[in-house]
Amino acid sequence: MTSREFTEGEHAVFVDALSEATASIPLSRPGAEVFANIATKIGRPVEEVTSHAYRYFIKLQSSALDLQTNLNPTLSLNLEGGGSQVGAAWTAEDDIRFEKLLTVHPAGEDRWDKIGSAMTPNKPPIEVRQAYSRLLADVFKIECGIDE
Image 1 (tube, helix red, strand yellow):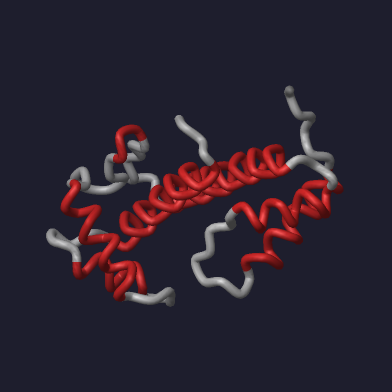
Image 2 (image 1 turned 180 degrees about the vertical axis):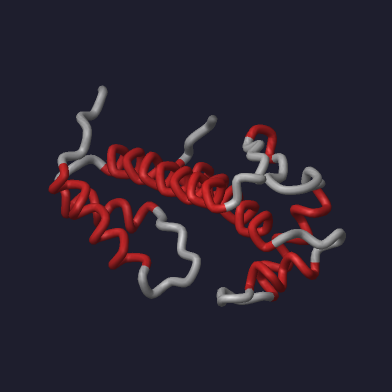
């Protein structure tokens, strides 16, 4: 069954409900319960809400990366294969270190600076932020059961 696009009104309810559900949870990743509640508010199946959320999240991430690229035209975007956007590609060890550092450095203004400085070799804050965006997208796809 193919679902129809969300109307502007449905999308507005979706965004409001998603914001409300995740506002009190730092670095939250909405789960099945959140999507079930949103589906009830909109009157759509959970699968359609989950799919809409995934597309919306990817659109937001893409917009953020476009903005970063426009602000820093020297960025070499290479999203395929998990490559680094700035500097050398990240290794599996870099990813492990990065994920550990995320637990040590709480959200805050200088989080990406601190994590970048603790990486070996050091990573620029924008590269660390982009790695975080990729990680969130990967986790979101896994939680939504999307295999791409």
